[in-house]
Length: 383
Image 1 (cartoon, rainbow, N blue to C red):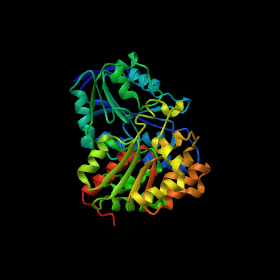
Image 2 (image 1 turned 60 degrees about the horizontal axis):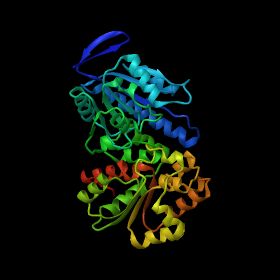
Image 3 (image 1 turned 45 degrees about the vertical axis):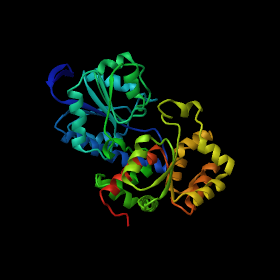
Image 4 (image 1 turned 135 degrees about the horizontal axis):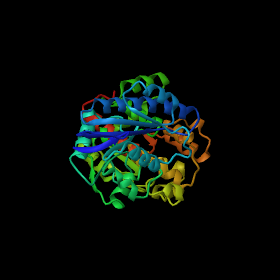
């Protein structure tokens, strides 16, 4: 039980508040589609929080005017950031915590945990209610869900411009005890790209509205299915590259019969600001440069049955100013729409590779891969 204030009224509660952030400044056809999906996921997570027995006071923070209008129909607080450019996550979070007088708080992105269940939300809330001087998160280096107490610790730390490093800053600068959530699709899968949405449509905990939207927009899940079919074969030679965590390697080894080839590098790339500082270095990138793009994929065809590649590490290693559209089109395999010549060539060769190759962001070698393994464990058919 703890005390907090809402608009000057003191309340005593055994429940905790949630702050949900959702917004973007990007423009373009794919970005518009992405916003449409993320808005639906934001409504979905809001409804799950409303269904939780341990959540009280939900604050939605967004710059989407249409999402603001839809959200007015829900019993939640709304904060518009339409006039806040550039947006600063930490400063906005601190302002909201102070404004509402929160003593404990859960904060997450609108599309950050699309497969989370109401029961999993309850577990986070109960942990926060029953503990002091704690930070709870789903990732030690780059969190998408962070819950912490006391909330006024924000006054004592360096406020991050994005949400990813908040958990580690609260641990390292704030001195809070760190608690990491168990590895489940609900806690460890988030949506950053359109391709991530395809994984939502494949999992039984996925939002059924998203599944319908994916089908109507004509996005294909066939390459993911082909890769999954290979993964479940005995002794499949599976290559994973990029920001591959030890935990996902253990899960693949425990639940499947793959033989893994792994290049794990640049973990915490975004949280540490290496992507912005131009200091990303990739062993795979050096290998591709030595072999050539064609030579690298010829190597894959000889030694691997399938590959999953976190291309963001490669793009930063090559110091490419990759636009969000080029990244998204690369993820989807639509190389003919890509402007950057190197990304175009790499994506085209991946599409024409004799073995299935999934390209994408961090999720494809972390939460997205977990979704595939989890779905297989639930005896789903990929055929």
